[in-house]
Length: 257
Image (cartoon, rainbow, N blue to C red; front, side):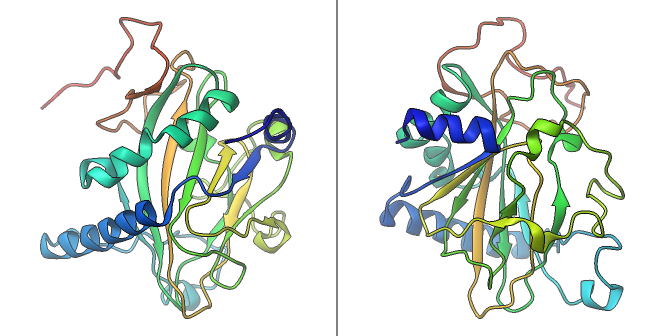
């Protein structure tokens, strides 16, 4: 799926857009799965608006914005389990993380037309810090994403700075890191944007008449251990490629209550 030059680009810039990882049929299966999850959530009275909260936008504007976000999507529909371990995904992950790769968690993010919520600039590191910083996000695009409907924006090379102090619920000061200054990552359905969890990223609101649906998979090297016991998900530790060399650390230490 990628070349040695692509790997070097990822190491230097902290992100890499890979074209055509999923075909049209696979994309359609995931689109349908996303829509059905939203319906089932509403029927179970578990629907919610997961828009970001904070002072990066005026309160009256925040009230109008909507974001549909649910974690552990590979437990809700098998289409996502197939996507997590897809051979094309594994081929990329083996080159930019290493021979051994495991899943940390999965989630879906849906920005509805005209009022899809913005994401302020941030790093993912504060949510689940790790020792070696191999953690990355693979953002699977289920729709064409451009600046109009709130495509992801990144600051190339920002991962080399290391962890940066965040404000509020883990986002960066919007006056120092405005979203519009990020490099837009325009992508087509089936493309996947891989970015390190230290890479500063965000997105503007969806101002278009088009939905922007993404599914996000977080991956890491199994030898990269968390520095805080936080953000545990059932499915954390699933081996995607290679092996786990740590027999006694194949899953987090949690208790069933």
